[in-house]
Length: 285
Image (cartoon, rainbow, N blue to C red; front, side, top):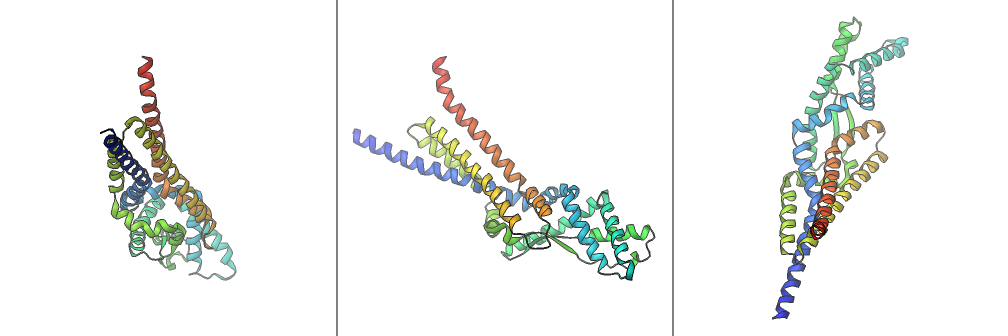
């Protein structure tokens, strides 16, 4: 009988350990899948994430440079080309400080979201681009209102600014479709497996402490992965893409990932500390 008890205890311990390891592994996957589906996959959430970038100096400078370049391709004023280009650049820069620019920026990002989702779902070598045509249209109106002679002749074309390319996001881009399809289920599975593993454990309090520490470690790995991904992205940008603007976009898109991971780390460490301290406090009492 004692042998049977010991055998059963070892079996429970082994199964518990497997379940708890799987739960910890699913923590970063759960965070990624929820982020991919409900922040990047949802148009309104995506636009809300990108909206603050309209005030970012590096993004505004990149937009102003691209719009100015696009406008100057369509006009030729001879020896005054440099003067006119400077004037247009100032006009575009001034426009990026207005409320109309923020409205145009949000409109451009709504269109960009559809292109982004298409590239993700097709598993193609797409780019994260923003069509500047709405901004060019607004600048054209401003120049016309100011009486600039050539302004009415400026054609409004689909001028895109590339902020990230699919290859810059590496394996994450390739896995995006699967992550979006998974949704909340990896996070739910992590919670269920953790609960089952703790209940099966022979020493539940110790299992709970180790599970909390393991989940905190898994979340820390996610924070490190995002930091490494950012460094690799900015180190391998194609020519013509502003490093500062790309960094701002990357930070905006991954902010929820980083914040969620840090919250998990803090909560799990507190849980581990509370479970570890509780019996000791009871004995003292």
